[in-house]
Length: 548
Ligand code: ISL
Ligand code: CA
Image 1 (cartoon, rainbow, N blue to C red):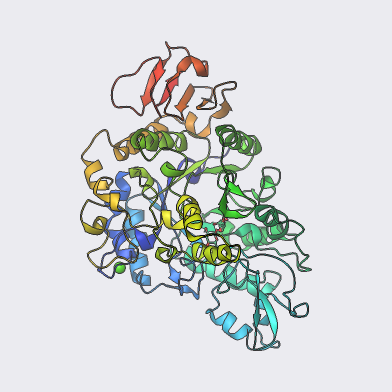
Image 2: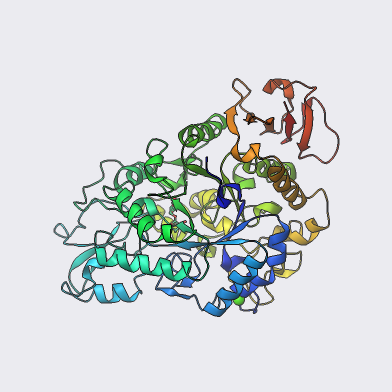
C-alpha cells in the first residue's frame, strides 16, 4: 500500500456560509476562515475541504455554479482565496475544493446560450429531449422532488436535471464540455489546490437512451439508472490522464449509487479516483421514499456497513470514513445520544471516526458535539431539498407536523446552522443578522467553553487525533470486527505487524463489560472517552482502546 499524504490525513470539512462571518453581513466568508486558521490548525487536522465557494445563485447551497472561475461575491474574492491558500500552506495544511461538474447552474452562460435554440453551439453542453406528448421524456424523479425533466418554452424541449430545475445536468458525452471541465480544473490546481472532492461524480455518465426506471425505491433508481453509467470509468480516466496526473492532487469522488461490488472499478491511482465517499451508512435509515421517509436503523446494519466496505477496499483502493456532513443530520443526534449522554456519545463517535481504516472526514462542529436544530415550521428551512420535499409531501396529504418530524430528524438544515464559536448572541458567528438562526444550545455547546476544559469534546478530539497519529496501526492496520458481541457493543481489532489494538465502543446507555467483546480485563487501556475512572464495566457510551 503506497504511502500518500491523503491516506494519513484527517480532513476537516467546512461549510463556508456557516463557519465565520468576518464582515458582519450575516454570511460566513473566506476572510472568516482565514481568521480561524489557528483554531483549525490547533485541531491537529491536515487538510480542509471547502463546500463550493464559486459564483452561484445559491439555489442549492452553492452546488449550482454560474461561474467556475469566480468566487461567490458573498464569500469574497480570488485575492481572498489566494490568501487562504497561503495561510493554509504556511501552517502545513492542505486545501480540498468541492467541484460540481455533474451539473451547472441554469444561470451559467453555457445554459443561457444552450436554451436559446436547438442550433446554439452550447445546445449539447446539456441534455435536451422531446417530451412524450405532454409528458417528460421518461419517469425519472429528481433528488429534489418532482420530475428530473423541465420543459423549456423557448424550444419546447425538456432538459435533464437530476437535482433542482436550476441545476441542469452537463452532457459529458460532448468532448467540448469535457475540455471545459479539464480547463476549469487546471485553473484551480494552478492556484495550489491540493485535492478535489468531486460532487456526484458517480452520475456524470448518462444512459443516453434514458430508459424509464422500473422501481419506486429512490436509492435503487440512483444505483441502477443515475450512477454507474456506461462511460463513467472512461470519463474519470480521461480526467486522470489529462489533468490530475499532471498535478499532485488527491481526488475523492462523491459516489451515491456506487456499491462495494463496483467501487474498485473507479479507484485507481493511475486511471481513476484516489478515494470515494460511499453512502452505506447515509441511506441506511432512508425508506423507499428517500430522505423524508425515515426508517429505523440497527446496530447490526451499522457495524456491517463498516465490515462490508473494509472487505471491499482492504487490498486495493482507499476508503473515506464519515458519519456526517452538510447533507445529513448531525452525527451525535443521528448515531449518538444528544440528550442525557451527549458528551460521551459525541466523543465515542469521534473515537470511531478516528480509529477506522481510511481517511476520516470530520464535519466542522462535530469536534464540539454540535447537535441537530429544530425547525418549528417548514418556512424556516433554508434547504431546497426540504422545501421541495414539503411540496411533494403535501401532494400526498402528509401534514406539516408529520413532515417536520422527518425534516427535523433527517433534513440538511440540521448541518448548516452557524458554527458555535461562543455563548455570545448568534454563537459568535456574526455580529450582523445571521443568514440562518444559530441553534439556541450554543450557550452550552461552543468552542470557547470547550477550549478551556481539558475534558471537553474538543479536547478529546485533539487527544484522539494525536493518538491516531501515534499509532499508525489505526491508519494502515487490518480491521476486523469482533464477532458475537451484543448489538450495543461495537468492538473491532486494528492489527499490524507491530501493534494490535482493540477498540470497544458501548453504543448504548446500558452497561457493558470488556468480556462482552472478548477483551481480557487485564488488557492495558491506552485511551478512553470518560475523564475519570475505568474498569471492567463500560459506562453509558463509554469507549476504550486497549493494547492486546
Ligand atoms: O442529500 C442526498 C439525497 O438524499 C444525497 O444523496 C445527496 O443529494 C447526493 O449524495 C448528492 O449530494 C451532492 O450533490 C447535490 C448537493 O445538493 C449536495 O449538497 C452534494 O453533497 C447536488 O449538487
Ligand atoms: Ca460575511
